[in-house]
Image (cartoon, rainbow, N blue to C red; front, side, top):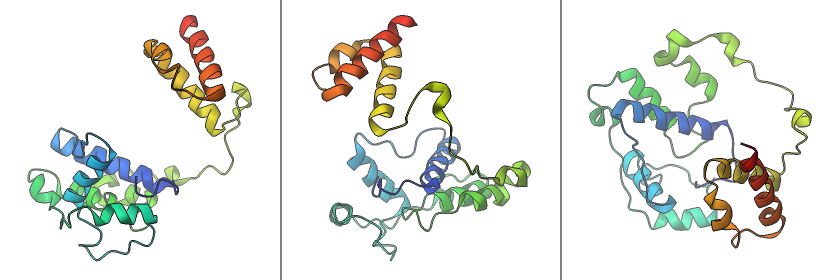
Length: 188
């Protein structure tokens, strides 16, 4: 959230860390009513980067300004929060839930972590070298195209959003997204 412009595998590592602590606690740990509330809850658990003495140069000026308004929480001890959890699971979660994505455990090192050792297979470390060929779907994955497809997919499950959002959507997303969503919803 604080550096959405640099989406990398490290964002997925954060997501997996959230899943691990959710499994340990049997409920989501960072439930926020909105993204600002969620960031505050995250900082309360993992600690404020400034309080922890971390470099914040990677943050945008807006993110730094926002973080200046967030209390300087020192963070909480995850092992104390989950006293019955496997210490290796907690250790992996700690390494995944680091606000600075540059300091987060890498995907490869997470897969090699002792907690995941029973499931590790070196063949899983292969990284695909070619891009996905979307020709089968007659689709060019542009931002607008992806938005339209997500809207259309959501409309399959919630057709009421077609009418609800018709006035809010702009430009061709409003027409093509709604029309495509309507066609797809009616074909189901």
